Image 1: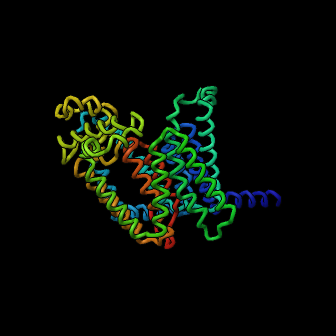
Image 2: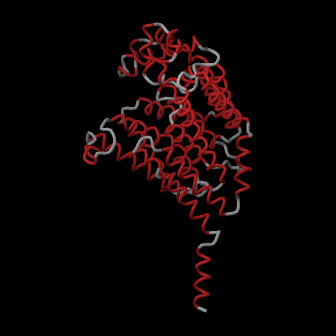
Image 3: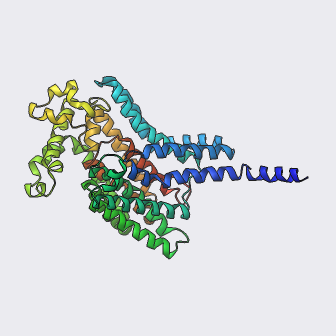
Length: 420
């Protein structure tokens, strides 16, 4: 009799109702730990996102919702925005046919696609719906990651040197700073606007915002500082004048994407030297020279580009022969430090046009939201786009994974629609 009761209790503890919840909690914990993982290893975001897929999908299967996962994925991909992004990925894959290093280009394409697939899989699982407890945990993880980064920067990376962890150069904290900014936006929004938001939650949101800003100011990342400024400004303006701010963001998107091929020339001719002198050497005239070099690549291959992923070794591409001799050297820097220009250089007018369409479709989706819901999403979009215009390579896996995680942390809209 006692053995029967024990078996019954054991079966209840392992019941399907509890297993999905436990698996979901594991997946959420992995997403919560992402900022700390990025502090420790600044390219680890794709790994954290990819590992999190396993428990979320397993939770859906354990709950008997595998069919819903497929249906939800089809629904996400069937939206105009989903179709536009799929079209870009397809065109990028096709463009590898005229890359000078197809193997390297295919690896770059996979680095872009995998984080996108991971984020879509988590969204399609239907198991990740940010709860107040998870948002508090994310906020604490972000604050801890920021403080650890600030302490290390202040101490000259002595802790990292003592433990022999990673590179002993201060710019390794640029990616954690950007990660903290992107993930802080949905965390602050969720804590501040929760249906039953507590005073302590709002205090935590304020502390989080100040800590993220402090890391951006302390780090070497001018992109992070610019991103914080744009985020705060756009969030405030969107809350007061949502339609006007959304329209301005759309115009800025169109202007930036269309001007990308002549960005370097325009900056060289029109940007006052007093402004350039305020930037570090690596972010001032040198960056403008890089933009000019890749702009000449666009002029040589305006329609189809040089092939996806070719920026990493553009100086070895046959198109380099069509670039002015004084600009060839800077084709070897790895990427143009400008996402729209990289899209133009690698995928041409076709690829850049598809990305512009995707961006406009996203803004159209945001327009349907009430101002309180639209403002933080538009702020994150504007901040992320600004960072991509002046920062790192466009298709780096850590960046795509962080953006995917940021979108997931916004959760579902009020009507149950996924506004990611």
